[in-house]
Image (cartoon, rainbow, N blue to C red; front, side, top):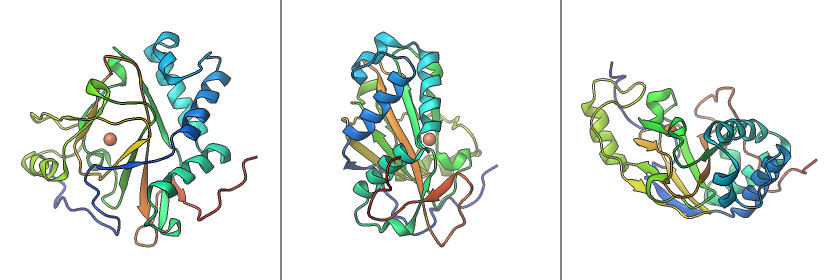
Length: 231
Ligand SMILES: [Fe+2]
């Protein structure tokens, strides 16, 4: 059943696949160190298709996602968010506690994600998405996403917004280079498919405005200014 008016809420801008840049090297270095710690003899992300199969890549991505909440990587993620959003005081934001690491390998269809908007999967209309391209993501391996107005037009015509979007839809790729981020909303229709060339590595997380909405337990504060010490 349609859940009612599809209107964004909260004080954060309705970023419409806005493209920004962030310092990618610290996050890639953390990810490569984590993979080496798990026994993968990797020196750069381009090595991964030769070293991993799909199930192992997905298992490692889940492990790295869990590890992202530890103080060291969390400090890197917070640094990245502050660099991405210089116009927003960190004290105004909650940040998702776990940064979702995704490693997509050619042919790994189990890692694909069908068309959906995050609101349809239960995420609040106050939230905004930060999608970080850690590797180049082009062609099939790009994030595929529709602009906000096109997404809304389709969502308004569908009888069922909850869950995966089942209507006929063509969602185009939004190619990115390593170090580019896409900012968008829980009403943007998007999907992921396995790349046909090399691997695609990304990290995504959500933010919430503080004060106007109570975060659920998966959000924690974004700290201002100085990065907490790494133990
Ligand atoms: Fe999503």
